[in-house]
Image (cartoon, rainbow, N blue to C red; front, side, top):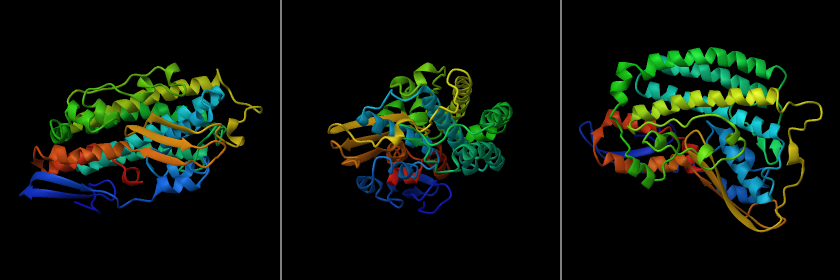
Length: 367
């Protein structure tokens, strides 16, 4: 399968040992999208790296920016010094991007299994979100929005009104997608008890995000290792016990609902508790030249759309170019499970269902 195949969700090559339509073993070959990101980062300033972070998980780039900037602000000693409005702007952008990412995951997974209408409906709603993010940041895909010490822009005029209008429509639309796809008997027959990932296997391979939570563990970094203003927000961590393809899809669907709760709380606080104005500078501390006061090595991570996105950042005193930057990719951990899961044997069509349910992004795997 691959490296150019519609079910591989990127340039991925999987060598399958088949007996008719029965998969007996699988071997994953990666590296087609390798771009030397980590080496390249050793020749850029801390601020200049951010646009390249966008190109790792290009489906949820703001979440990657959130992780990298958190690491940079920790080594600089800036964490917790930013105005609350900046933190809420970051979380609002991140959760809108998470919803858009999950809609893409559900939509492309639907078409993997032949459900074309589900794909079209999910992408229709994602398009509204992409247009909102474009109106806010100026970009549809690669945003460069979260900066070290601040954000690129405050909310544009009329943005909250447009967003509230969309949310009223979207909550109704989500129910339609659930009825059309997730509760559909054919979709459930294709995904229930298929591609089961036991909790022990998920933990052994370092799974995270919806893949881990669908196997029964309520591990979400927004709760387990709180960062930004997430401790001030009310939301639940959805889990499922079955660990199958349907459970992973349903966890993503429920996470969309929880992200909507966060979005509404952020908007309310941005309107009332932390309003902007002529005196508010969204760039915050980013106008200062970020120079570490000492040699430091830290790891910082956030809850991305696919799981734990993390960065090991090593800096030297008074130098704004990192000595080393290492990215932690959730998709790589999930891909690593495929050979172990294929050992049990499965139909080729079920292998496609399993691979699609992992929601991988190959640029994040290869870097």
